[in-house]
Image (cartoon, rainbow, N blue to C red):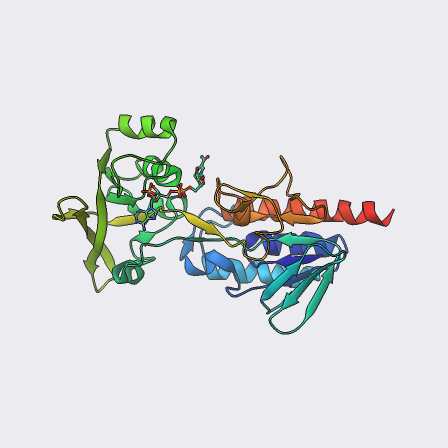
Length: 306
Ligand code: NDP
């Protein structure tokens, strides 16, 4: 079993794969440990009240190794799903052959690209309300974007914030109508239409956000808004480069899997975590899907051996 990706989905597939004697090899990719290595406290991994993201990922890697999985510090540049066994080509010039493949390459949040956004990432600027909303109890929060994610995050953040300001670059939302209805009915949410974020301002020592500068796209008028948290929700890009021309995708590039399964459009190829999940995007759901993928790979390999 070849596992591509080293987030919670990949490592969990490796633990289950090793225990099922599937000789799993996990390829870590460019960012070993994935998105959680760029977060700070994780407070929603069941069984551990609080842990730093990088520590959680180190624990998962150690667990996979202890279970017997082989962990390779390599990057897959090409994956050939036409052949069987499937063949993956590593940057290290290693060629990996496998009877089943678990794709766990994850996704990347899209960012605005401001220097100040980069500076305050993890210090008031976040791309995950479920992960970080809790830190802004009793504060004003700004959410950037107009899609389903932005609206869902704005609604969720009203559980913590005294006020949520949604900032959108146009005068209508892309989000589903039902979500828009909920948004407009929520007295804690204010929408700033036709507005772009020009800058995020804050303190140096300690690093922390104090507000944002927005620009009205029609009048170019600038406005300062006070807020302690800035949630950027302008979409995610699934990391699908290896397979986007070989597997069925939907919702902007996410891999299609069968209902209640990680099975992709090619038998023996499974997708787990953020590469397929545009809805939940949690470490624990990714881990669950990694488990499903390994169990399904085990069944697939048993079937072809018959
Ligand atoms: P989307 O691509 O749907 O929306 C992104 C939003 O961010 C758009 O409103 C876009 O504006 C705005 N945006 C993009 N780039 C910038 C920028 N540089 N500056 C300012 N604003 C920007 O992404 P989502 O993450 O919301 O959703 C991704 C997919 O996942 C969708 O298909 C969505 O339906 C799905 N989804 C489904 C959910 C569910 O079913 N419950 C929950 C969450 C997501 P503009 O509108 O002007 O392009």
